[in-house]
Length: 178
Image (cartoon, rainbow, N blue to C red; front, top):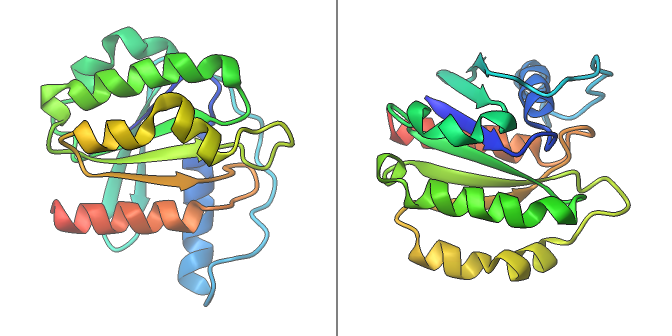
């Protein structure tokens, strides 16, 4: 099981929809690129969504709404991997995202989970650079102190930038974790 977590409005639902869209294109073309097409507008998730991504194996992604942050911990059981999404275009949300990430990394049930931090919305003109974010949340220190294996990637769920890397990470992580 893979948990997809992050504050409200960071793009979790769009990410899952885009991963479902990119996978057939990746399997049928050499470079996995091409027009992702338009998607219907998404709404903030209230509750949880379960989505299966079928690549080399079936990977179930459980997306939890940002408003459910206080009870995220009740979903940590059976979690092999964690996708944590940050909105790079919203500096006012960054401190709350950092607190959420710290809580996730210190949770005993997630000590063995692989973590992918997704810096989303890099396509917007007002986004913070990865260097700015790493400095503000002291990411190198977080990674050094964490029990988990942590990877980061910059993405645009809207335009599809970086989604092949996310899919590759999911496949590799779930191949290792069985």
